[in-house]
Every structure is written in C-alpha cells, then in structure tokens.
Length: 173
Image (cartoon, rainbow, N blue to C red; front, top):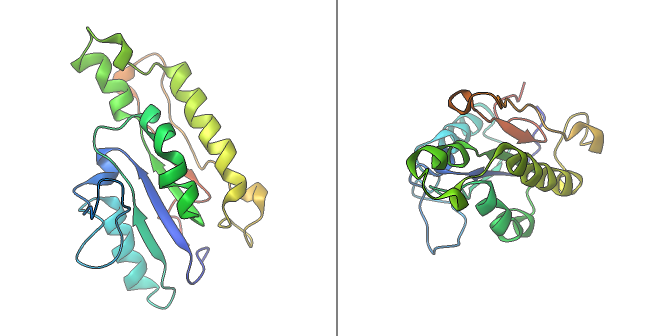
C-alpha cells in the first residue's frame, strides 16, 4: 500500500467534494467524529480505507466548498492546503468554472476560461507537489505528479477534471 500509517489525505474542491461536510466554523476543515466528511467520495474513500486498512489510521480531511471554482481554490490554498500539511492531496474542481458560462452568461467576470483555469491550477500543482511526502516508491518527488487531467477545449459540455497530486486516493493497490 502507498499510504503509510498516520499520514493525512486531504480532499479539496467544489460541491462534488463538499457534499454536505460538517463545518464547526466557516473556515474549519472537516474531519473527526460524527460523519464530518459529507456524503461524497471523501466519505467513501475514508470508509474503504478504514475497512481494508484499519491499522493505518489515515487522517482524512475534507475542505471542499460548494460553488467554488479554481479562483476560489487559489484564494484559500494557503489556509486549506498548505497550512494543513497533507501527505496526499486530491483535487476535484472544474464544474463551476464551466457552468458559470451557462447559468450567468451575462456576467463574464464569473467565467473561468480554459487558459485561466489551466494557469491557476497548474501553478497550484507545481507549487504544492514538492511539499507532499506521499507518493510512489517511498515518496520520491518525481512520483508525486498529476495522475491525469481530461480537458476538452472544443466542448465545455464534455469538460471534466479528475486531478490528483501524489496518487489518486482510490488507486491504493
């Protein structure tokens, strides 16, 4: 297994990540008791890890925020990622970057176009990657890269993002 005992796996993103996570304050990360992770994929990953690897005691943290786009991630990155010092990081962001072009077409300041999206996310990934201790083969820096991005510039309706720094949480075998 790639995850090691006592490491922190942090999930950040939009409503797909948030999914009703518990907040003690507006800016607090969600972790601990009483179903803090919400009902989405961070909760599922936590359940899987606890069931399959109960002795690893992985600390799962969810800092997803509904309605966020990549600009919001950039603005809260220090507090919600760097200050929490994760070993592993999962980023799921992009639907609001695209959707704002359809639900508020008359408000172009809300639109995040592909070049801006790639620039912001690329910088966040490049700046954070060296700080993560998680990774393959003992955590070598060259192994803690982007697992994959699917991005279709020609059709926003086909747009999807699935980005993981380090390794995707569900590719543990």
